[in-house]
Image (cartoon, rainbow, N blue to C red):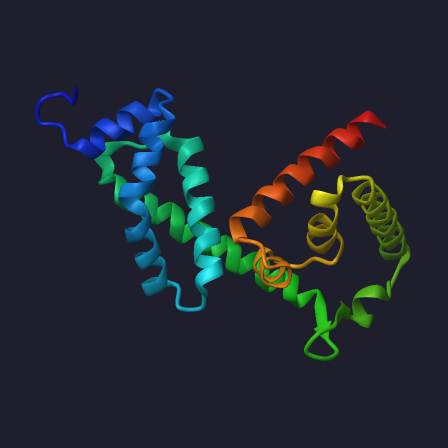
Length: 195
């Protein structure tokens, strides 16, 4: 039972801090609509898929950092909004960096910019060789994944597609794509460590 004068959300936070997963699920249920609305209103450049991605990442971060929440500094919802805002900025920055590395030849095909592949010194040539070797190793490991994960991992890790693009192309739910990529990365880490 919640202490006298405590709000239900405070009790959920208290329970989540001590590791109660059902309390954290209840916090998700109580706050997800508000966080989605906040992102739609403040991050106009994010579409539905990115907002869902940011929401998922926000709650993952909140779950890991729940013990750092200090109710004396503000409401739980405000704390979540700060995490969502920073996460959205990170997602936008990652997307911008990814797009800067590609030049669109037409609407469907992306390839590395020629300028990005031409080195101007020994260090750049060495970096190019290292990147190529790492890419080849990753591609080889991806080919060893079970069928369920191989195609999605290839699209994300080799082709550099975003979760949203993969979901649209494969017809899978965005959360399914995220889960499969996360599991594929875990399997790849185990495969790398076994070598």
